[in-house]
Length: 351
Image (cartoon, rainbow, N blue to C red):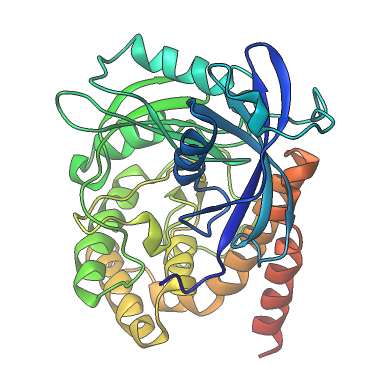
Protein backbone atom coordinates (compact mmCIF):
# COMPACT_ATOMS: atom_id res chain seq x y z
CA UNK A 1 0.00 0.00 0.00
CA UNK A 2 1.27 3.47 -0.90
CA UNK A 3 1.27 5.93 1.96
CA UNK A 4 0.95 8.75 -0.58
CA UNK A 5 -1.85 9.55 -3.03
CA UNK A 6 -2.42 7.36 -6.07
CA UNK A 7 -1.49 8.83 -9.43
CA UNK A 8 -3.12 8.61 -12.84
CA UNK A 9 -1.52 9.99 -15.96
CA UNK A 10 -2.64 11.41 -19.28
CA UNK A 11 -0.07 11.34 -22.07
CA UNK A 12 -0.02 13.76 -24.99
CA UNK A 13 1.78 11.65 -27.57
CA UNK A 14 4.14 12.80 -30.33
CA UNK A 15 5.20 10.13 -32.82
CA UNK A 16 7.68 9.93 -35.71
CA UNK A 17 4.84 11.12 -37.94
CA UNK A 18 3.96 14.13 -35.76
CA UNK A 19 1.66 14.88 -32.85
CA UNK A 20 -1.09 12.25 -32.55
CA UNK A 21 -3.33 13.07 -29.60
CA UNK A 22 -3.73 12.05 -25.99
CA UNK A 23 -4.47 8.91 -24.02
CA UNK A 24 -7.27 8.46 -21.54
CA UNK A 25 -6.32 8.73 -17.87
CA UNK A 26 -4.54 5.54 -16.78
CA UNK A 27 -3.29 4.52 -13.33
CA UNK A 28 0.43 4.04 -12.69
CA UNK A 29 2.29 2.19 -9.96
CA UNK A 30 4.03 5.06 -8.18
CA UNK A 31 2.69 8.38 -6.89
CA UNK A 32 5.94 10.29 -7.58
CA UNK A 33 5.49 12.69 -10.49
CA UNK A 34 9.09 12.47 -11.72
CA UNK A 35 9.35 8.67 -11.50
CA UNK A 36 8.56 7.81 -15.10
CA UNK A 37 9.53 4.16 -15.55
CA UNK A 38 5.97 3.07 -14.58
CA UNK A 39 4.54 5.60 -17.05
CA UNK A 40 6.44 4.09 -19.96
CA UNK A 41 5.42 0.60 -18.81
CA UNK A 42 1.75 1.58 -18.69
CA UNK A 43 1.92 3.27 -22.09
CA UNK A 44 3.62 0.24 -23.65
CA UNK A 45 0.70 -1.87 -22.47
CA UNK A 46 -1.88 0.65 -23.69
CA UNK A 47 -0.58 1.81 -27.09
CA UNK A 48 1.88 -0.98 -27.88
CA UNK A 49 5.10 0.99 -28.47
CA UNK A 50 8.10 2.21 -26.51
CA UNK A 51 7.93 5.78 -25.22
CA UNK A 52 9.98 8.41 -23.44
CA UNK A 53 8.47 11.02 -21.12
CA UNK A 54 9.61 14.51 -22.07
CA UNK A 55 8.08 16.79 -19.45
CA UNK A 56 5.19 17.46 -17.11
CA UNK A 57 2.45 19.66 -18.56
CA UNK A 58 -0.04 19.97 -15.70
CA UNK A 59 -1.22 18.34 -12.48
CA UNK A 60 -4.68 18.21 -10.96
CA UNK A 61 -5.18 17.09 -7.38
CA UNK A 62 -2.61 15.27 -5.28
CA UNK A 63 0.03 17.02 -3.23
CA UNK A 64 3.28 18.16 -4.85
CA UNK A 65 5.00 16.02 -6.02
CA UNK A 66 2.69 13.04 -5.44
CA UNK A 67 -0.65 11.76 -6.68
CA UNK A 68 -3.50 13.29 -8.61
CA UNK A 69 -3.99 13.27 -12.38
CA UNK A 70 -0.79 14.37 -14.09
CA UNK A 71 -0.45 15.18 -17.79
CA UNK A 72 2.83 14.69 -19.62
CA UNK A 73 4.20 15.22 -23.11
CA UNK A 74 5.46 11.85 -24.30
CA UNK A 75 7.45 10.78 -27.35
CA UNK A 76 6.54 7.45 -28.97
CA UNK A 77 9.46 5.84 -30.80
CA UNK A 78 7.18 4.09 -33.30
CA UNK A 79 3.68 4.72 -34.58
CA UNK A 80 1.09 3.52 -32.02
CA UNK A 81 -2.49 2.45 -32.57
CA UNK A 82 -3.90 5.91 -33.28
CA UNK A 83 -7.44 4.74 -32.51
CA UNK A 84 -6.43 4.68 -28.83
CA UNK A 85 -5.63 8.41 -28.85
CA UNK A 86 -8.14 11.25 -28.55
CA UNK A 87 -7.78 14.46 -30.61
CA UNK A 88 -6.33 17.40 -28.67
CA UNK A 89 -4.17 20.44 -29.39
CA UNK A 90 -0.45 19.72 -29.51
CA UNK A 91 1.79 20.99 -26.68
CA UNK A 92 3.62 24.23 -27.33
CA UNK A 93 6.62 23.53 -29.57
CA UNK A 94 9.12 25.45 -27.45
CA UNK A 95 9.40 27.44 -24.25
CA UNK A 96 11.98 29.45 -22.34
CA UNK A 97 14.36 27.30 -20.28
CA UNK A 98 13.23 24.02 -21.87
CA UNK A 99 15.96 21.48 -21.21
CA UNK A 100 17.47 19.26 -23.92
CA UNK A 101 15.96 16.04 -22.53
CA UNK A 102 12.49 17.65 -22.48
CA UNK A 103 12.59 18.13 -26.26
CA UNK A 104 11.68 15.64 -28.97
CA UNK A 105 14.66 13.37 -29.53
CA UNK A 106 16.34 14.48 -26.31
CA UNK A 107 16.17 11.21 -24.34
CA UNK A 108 17.26 9.21 -27.39
CA UNK A 109 20.26 11.51 -27.92
CA UNK A 110 21.40 10.91 -24.35
CA UNK A 111 21.18 7.13 -24.78
CA UNK A 112 23.05 7.33 -28.10
CA UNK A 113 25.85 9.20 -26.35
CA UNK A 114 26.02 6.51 -23.67
CA UNK A 115 26.09 3.82 -26.35
CA UNK A 116 29.24 5.40 -27.74
CA UNK A 117 30.93 4.59 -24.43
CA UNK A 118 29.37 1.34 -23.18
CA UNK A 119 27.85 -1.81 -24.66
CA UNK A 120 24.27 -2.32 -23.58
CA UNK A 121 22.84 -5.82 -23.16
CA UNK A 122 19.20 -4.71 -23.24
CA UNK A 123 16.86 -1.73 -23.59
CA UNK A 124 17.60 1.56 -21.88
CA UNK A 125 15.10 2.30 -19.10
CA UNK A 126 14.05 5.88 -18.43
CA UNK A 127 13.77 6.02 -14.64
CA UNK A 128 13.25 9.68 -13.83
CA UNK A 129 12.80 12.95 -15.65
CA UNK A 130 11.98 16.45 -14.46
CA UNK A 131 13.47 19.91 -14.46
CA UNK A 132 16.50 18.95 -12.35
CA UNK A 133 17.63 15.71 -13.97
CA UNK A 134 17.11 12.96 -16.48
CA UNK A 135 18.08 9.45 -15.35
CA UNK A 136 18.28 6.23 -17.38
CA UNK A 137 19.29 2.75 -16.23
CA UNK A 138 21.37 0.94 -18.83
CA UNK A 139 21.99 -2.83 -18.58
CA UNK A 140 25.51 -4.07 -19.32
CA UNK A 141 27.36 -7.34 -18.87
CA UNK A 142 29.02 -5.84 -15.77
CA UNK A 143 25.76 -4.68 -14.19
CA UNK A 144 23.59 -1.57 -14.42
CA UNK A 145 25.08 1.73 -15.53
CA UNK A 146 23.34 5.02 -14.72
CA UNK A 147 23.06 7.81 -17.28
CA UNK A 148 22.30 11.18 -15.72
CA UNK A 149 21.86 14.62 -17.26
CA UNK A 150 21.46 17.87 -15.31
CA UNK A 151 20.76 21.55 -16.12
CA UNK A 152 23.59 24.02 -16.76
CA UNK A 153 23.12 25.74 -13.39
CA UNK A 154 24.28 22.60 -11.57
CA UNK A 155 27.85 21.50 -10.86
CA UNK A 156 29.73 19.12 -13.16
CA UNK A 157 28.79 15.97 -11.28
CA UNK A 158 31.43 13.79 -12.90
CA UNK A 159 34.20 16.23 -11.98
CA UNK A 160 32.93 16.55 -8.41
CA UNK A 161 32.76 12.78 -7.94
CA UNK A 162 36.29 12.35 -9.29
CA UNK A 163 37.51 15.01 -6.86
CA UNK A 164 35.97 13.09 -3.95
CA UNK A 165 37.17 9.72 -5.28
CA UNK A 166 40.78 10.95 -5.27
CA UNK A 167 40.54 10.92 -1.46
CA UNK A 168 37.93 8.21 -0.78
CA UNK A 169 36.72 6.16 -3.77
CA UNK A 170 34.42 4.12 -1.51
CA UNK A 171 32.30 7.20 -0.83
CA UNK A 172 31.10 7.71 -4.43
CA UNK A 173 30.04 5.74 -7.50
CA UNK A 174 32.62 5.29 -10.24
CA UNK A 175 32.53 7.77 -13.11
CA UNK A 176 32.61 5.81 -16.38
CA UNK A 177 32.34 8.82 -18.69
CA UNK A 178 31.34 12.43 -18.60
CA UNK A 179 30.55 15.36 -20.88
CA UNK A 180 29.02 18.80 -20.24
CA UNK A 181 25.73 18.30 -18.42
CA UNK A 182 25.86 14.49 -18.41
CA UNK A 183 27.64 11.61 -16.72
CA UNK A 184 27.73 7.80 -16.78
CA UNK A 185 28.02 6.21 -13.34
CA UNK A 186 28.47 2.71 -11.96
CA UNK A 187 25.80 1.11 -9.79
CA UNK A 188 25.71 2.39 -6.19
CA UNK A 189 24.71 -0.75 -4.33
CA UNK A 190 22.22 -0.86 -1.48
CA UNK A 191 18.98 0.92 -0.66
CA UNK A 192 18.46 4.58 0.20
CA UNK A 193 18.84 5.57 3.84
CA UNK A 194 15.62 7.47 4.48
CA UNK A 195 15.29 5.35 7.61
CA UNK A 196 18.67 6.57 8.77
CA UNK A 197 20.44 4.69 11.57
CA UNK A 198 23.17 5.72 13.99
CA UNK A 199 25.43 3.10 12.43
CA UNK A 200 25.07 4.69 9.01
CA UNK A 201 25.93 8.08 10.48
CA UNK A 202 29.01 6.51 12.09
CA UNK A 203 30.04 5.10 8.71
CA UNK A 204 29.47 8.02 6.33
CA UNK A 205 29.95 11.24 8.30
CA UNK A 206 33.58 10.76 9.45
CA UNK A 207 34.65 9.65 5.97
CA UNK A 208 33.02 12.69 4.37
CA UNK A 209 34.57 15.02 6.96
CA UNK A 210 37.99 13.52 6.17
CA UNK A 211 37.50 14.27 2.47
CA UNK A 212 36.31 17.81 3.20
CA UNK A 213 39.37 18.37 5.39
CA UNK A 214 41.65 17.12 2.60
CA UNK A 215 40.00 19.37 0.01
CA UNK A 216 39.98 22.56 2.08
CA UNK A 217 41.51 25.56 0.39
CA UNK A 218 40.88 27.73 -2.64
CA UNK A 219 37.40 27.32 -4.15
CA UNK A 220 37.12 24.82 -6.98
CA UNK A 221 33.38 25.38 -7.49
CA UNK A 222 30.80 28.12 -7.23
CA UNK A 223 30.62 29.33 -3.63
CA UNK A 224 27.52 29.15 -1.48
CA UNK A 225 25.57 32.39 -1.61
CA UNK A 226 25.33 32.32 2.19
CA UNK A 227 28.61 32.80 4.10
CA UNK A 228 28.91 32.11 7.81
CA UNK A 229 31.61 32.49 10.50
CA UNK A 230 34.16 29.71 10.20
CA UNK A 231 34.63 28.71 13.91
CA UNK A 232 38.02 27.36 12.88
CA UNK A 233 36.58 25.16 10.12
CA UNK A 234 37.58 25.56 6.47
CA UNK A 235 35.67 26.51 3.36
CA UNK A 236 35.54 23.30 1.34
CA UNK A 237 33.50 21.14 -0.98
CA UNK A 238 29.95 20.64 0.27
CA UNK A 239 27.61 18.04 -1.16
CA UNK A 240 24.76 20.52 -1.23
CA UNK A 241 21.94 18.03 -0.65
CA UNK A 242 23.36 15.69 1.99
CA UNK A 243 20.05 14.17 3.06
CA UNK A 244 19.80 10.41 3.76
CA UNK A 245 17.87 9.77 0.57
CA UNK A 246 21.15 10.46 -1.23
CA UNK A 247 22.99 7.92 0.90
CA UNK A 248 23.07 4.25 -0.05
CA UNK A 249 23.21 1.54 2.60
CA UNK A 250 26.53 0.41 1.10
CA UNK A 251 28.09 3.67 2.34
CA UNK A 252 28.09 5.37 -1.08
CA UNK A 253 26.72 8.91 -1.45
CA UNK A 254 25.04 9.88 -4.74
CA UNK A 255 23.60 12.99 -6.44
CA UNK A 256 26.50 15.45 -6.31
CA UNK A 257 25.16 18.02 -8.76
CA UNK A 258 24.13 20.46 -5.98
CA UNK A 259 27.74 20.69 -4.80
CA UNK A 260 29.13 24.13 -3.94
CA UNK A 261 32.09 25.51 -2.03
CA UNK A 262 31.05 26.52 1.46
CA UNK A 263 31.08 25.88 5.18
CA UNK A 264 30.97 22.14 5.98
CA UNK A 265 28.27 22.64 8.61
CA UNK A 266 25.80 23.18 5.74
CA UNK A 267 25.95 19.46 5.00
CA UNK A 268 25.49 18.47 8.63
CA UNK A 269 22.42 20.72 8.81
CA UNK A 270 20.94 19.27 5.62
CA UNK A 271 21.32 15.82 7.14
CA UNK A 272 19.51 16.87 10.32
CA UNK A 273 16.73 18.53 8.33
CA UNK A 274 15.72 15.03 7.19
CA UNK A 275 16.94 12.74 9.99
CA UNK A 276 14.65 11.80 12.87
CA UNK A 277 15.00 14.24 15.81
CA UNK A 278 16.24 11.47 18.09
CA UNK A 279 19.33 11.16 15.85
CA UNK A 280 20.25 14.86 15.91
CA UNK A 281 22.45 14.72 19.01
CA UNK A 282 24.24 11.69 17.60
CA UNK A 283 24.86 13.47 14.29
CA UNK A 284 26.20 16.54 16.13
CA UNK A 285 28.52 14.39 18.22
CA UNK A 286 29.88 12.30 15.34
CA UNK A 287 30.32 15.32 13.07
CA UNK A 288 31.99 17.48 15.72
CA UNK A 289 34.31 14.70 16.92
CA UNK A 290 35.37 14.00 13.34
CA UNK A 291 36.33 17.63 12.83
CA UNK A 292 38.04 17.95 16.21
CA UNK A 293 40.20 14.93 15.39
CA UNK A 294 41.45 16.76 12.29
CA UNK A 295 41.31 20.38 13.51
CA UNK A 296 41.70 20.33 17.32
CA UNK A 297 41.45 24.13 17.58
CA UNK A 298 38.12 24.33 15.74
CA UNK A 299 34.74 24.88 17.40
CA UNK A 300 32.35 22.65 15.45
CA UNK A 301 29.52 22.63 17.99
CA UNK A 302 29.47 26.43 18.00
CA UNK A 303 29.27 26.31 14.21
CA UNK A 304 26.33 23.93 14.39
CA UNK A 305 24.52 26.25 16.77
CA UNK A 306 24.12 28.95 14.09
CA UNK A 307 24.49 26.92 10.88
CA UNK A 308 20.79 25.93 10.59
CA UNK A 309 19.95 29.55 9.78
CA UNK A 310 22.60 29.64 7.04
CA UNK A 311 21.44 26.27 5.74
CA UNK A 312 17.84 27.45 5.37
CA UNK A 313 18.97 30.61 3.60
CA UNK A 314 21.21 28.52 1.33
CA UNK A 315 18.20 26.31 0.51
CA UNK A 316 16.04 29.35 -0.26
CA UNK A 317 18.59 30.73 -2.71
CA UNK A 318 18.95 27.31 -4.35
CA UNK A 319 15.20 26.85 -4.78
CA UNK A 320 14.86 30.35 -6.24
CA UNK A 321 17.59 29.49 -8.72
CA UNK A 322 15.53 26.47 -9.77
CA UNK A 323 12.45 28.63 -10.28
CA UNK A 324 14.38 31.24 -12.25
CA UNK A 325 15.83 28.69 -14.65
CA UNK A 326 13.19 26.05 -15.36
CA UNK A 327 10.27 25.83 -17.74
CA UNK A 328 6.99 27.37 -16.61
CA UNK A 329 4.96 24.13 -16.55
CA UNK A 330 7.51 22.46 -14.25
CA UNK A 331 7.68 25.30 -11.72
CA UNK A 332 4.92 23.48 -9.83
CA UNK A 333 7.58 21.24 -8.30
CA UNK A 334 9.26 24.18 -6.51
CA UNK A 335 6.66 26.93 -6.16
CA UNK A 336 6.66 28.19 -2.58
CA UNK A 337 9.88 26.39 -1.58
CA UNK A 338 11.97 29.58 -1.16
CA UNK A 339 9.29 31.05 1.10
CA UNK A 340 9.15 27.88 3.20
CA UNK A 341 12.90 28.04 3.76
CA UNK A 342 12.87 31.75 4.56
CA UNK A 343 10.08 31.28 7.11
CA UNK A 344 12.09 28.51 8.74
CA UNK A 345 15.18 30.73 8.87
CA UNK A 346 13.14 33.47 10.54
CA UNK A 347 11.75 30.98 13.02
CA UNK A 348 15.27 29.90 13.95
CA UNK A 349 16.38 33.50 14.43
CA UNK A 350 13.33 34.32 16.56
CA UNK A 351 13.54 31.11 18.56
